[in-house]
Length: 165
Image (tube, rainbow, N blue to C red; front, side, top):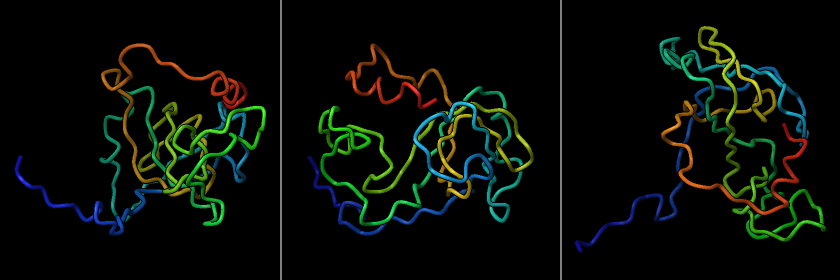
């Protein structure tokens, strides 16, 4: 095999991302449960995007939204294992085996319902990000990208989601 040179990211250099917009409305405070009926607008950065950036997304029922947990302080970041939500009755699992906000790169990902397109705003329901949250990307949900085969999860993962939506 030919020798491959390491990318800048592999060399540990910083990766620069710029928000495409911000969450407007919805909740002002981070609360763990009952996000299912929360509506918010993802307001695109008007200096970079016009309404054409959202053209056609209203043909999809759902979107995946990638955002930054920008309110998590450095001293709360987890690199190892913890009990989800601090519950000792749930197993100690690594940060990459859960979806908590205290992740090393503070990235959130949620599949939410598309309610409407409003110019450079995308109204969504069920986005578990608070007002002011930087949004890094939006992708339409396509069945072709859904998991193939059976999806499995441990019992605690189902329990943690019981009241989430």
